[in-house]
Image (cartoon, rainbow, N blue to C red):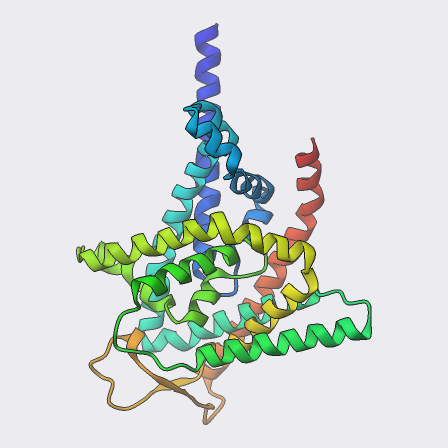
Length: 334
């Protein structure tokens, strides 16, 4: 009887681990798409509170347990089994979706539609973040608008910087990883959008395609390792500071983030044409100029429809997540 119970319990754990891996896949796929937050997906799927709790337990208590070689207690304290299953799922989701997105952006026929989808998602996400800014006085309203404008101008300036033929430096990749991971764990803020603003999104999504094609260059592995180290440090250090800012300066932080999202939109304008003399360059090194379509043909209609549908999709995800929050809170309290 005891053996049967252990077998049943082991099967339940395996099913639970598989469920966490599948949820991680959804989070990873969402994190690759600018405008969709992996944190939002975690919230919808009922694991956000558990994820934030596990991350917050990387503290002095954990170091004390590791120092005393209390391996089992440390693993339980940080919910290690959950984090490992979720991490595997996130890695699978990022790998599969990054290859797809990179192919879509590299193909001239699908590039405008892809940018349109990203554009609509970020418009909806920025609107939802701005909606979270609750001001109660004229002075607070003026401050929120000022911070939003500063964020928009800064993001716009970053997105207008020209591309360089050189690959991003390792310190810059580390910095980008530390910043992007903070956005990835927050509902409503897209880490991929941050990477787009910082100018390394296409570079990172290009790496999995090279690895799968057998191009295991040491520089590619080093880029991934350094970026991953930046994500880890950002998760341990900056995420707590960011949560503190959202707790103590909630409206100001959201106003600044909202401005950054709106300011980055020019990077994703769907109607772009390649500047002359760049035939031999890779897509991530090419320069484009924004244009207006000459006529409202079927292609333009498809681009506009894609932007509208992606905007509505983000609103639908947000609506679904709000409906699930009371249930999750009840489960957490239980």
